[in-house]
Length: 439
Ligand code: NIG
Ligand code: FE
Image 1 (cartoon, rainbow, N blue to C red):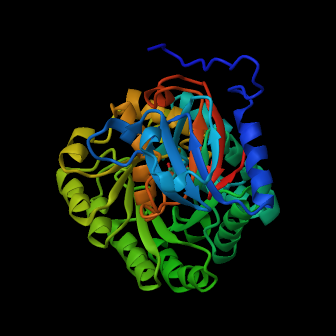
Image 2 (cartoon, protein in one colour):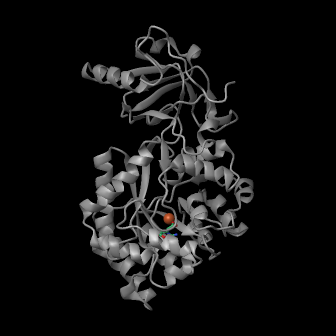
Image 3 (cartoon, rainbow, N blue to C red):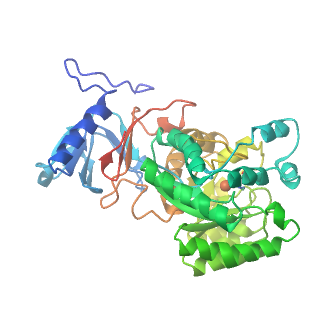
């Protein structure tokens, strides 16, 4: 098998590999005008990521039938039932189709940057020391408060476009740099606007309990009261968030403070997630799992009790190798223990200005393998199937199976193992989002 797939151009045909997205998009647009919404795509390999025994759920010489927004059939082209014979058919010149990628943990909306703090860290000051000295998250809070909603959308859009260029279809975006009701709501509105403007599916997390704002110095419980009594009700009332998150850490909030926040969020109908055991073991993962959290994120310091609680609750572990790398950490999350307990592992960029200014899910996948020891298949599952589960969207997204949303990415590789492998390559060639060709 060649190392990198070069799909030969068909002599005499204008339908070359590189132009495939264009002619496919054109064909689909024309068909839409004629009210044709039933399609069969064939000619490519498909990594369904459906789980089970076949690695990557791989189907070579595959066909995928789409009925509008939904996947109607997927399998070997030779087995396509005759009932699909009348559907509009497009044959791709090779390549690979995977579920569109999902970034299930980002702080992509923020003001300013923290390049100078990065320099301080390179010269020896720790992330915790910068945070304790009033820098870190607090410096991003000042810049975010100063920015308008439109400015936040515009600056985040550049970062989002980087992710879209690598096959992203869905993103989770957190607040957490406003730290008062008005600015937390501003961030969440900006996140929703970013979804509308870009066409990408956005899910939002309220992260009011991210850091203690300067005006509450020494009054941490009073700030938690504000989160619970004012911010959460306002966010829920305006339907600005799908999930509630928090930072459970010795430089942020305790387990009992986070329990108060998560319990209130749950009572308001929000799903739960938590930054847990990133820099130390606070036993936050166990608490969040017991409350039914969809995900616990970071987890470098999680112990077996935490992992077991996550397994029992079906909580997804969201691993963030970008933060591990950028902070120069050495303690890795316990991958073998998570595997042994059957905890599903997602991978996300954690895109944020302080600990992970990362806008590449392909690089995230590579780092998941090289830094944490995931297999390339686990890495792709981490940005598809497991990421969908982390967002509670597993019934609709994350795998290419009948009944799910037709959200997929088209790649210039012949095997899914080649997605996490290269550093800095981008083989993405196009994307179908909710049944529409968008690239
Ligand atoms: O996920 N851990 C807490 N929150 C972010 C960091 C945010 C920041 O430093 O601005 C994270 O790594
Ligand atoms: Fe984070």
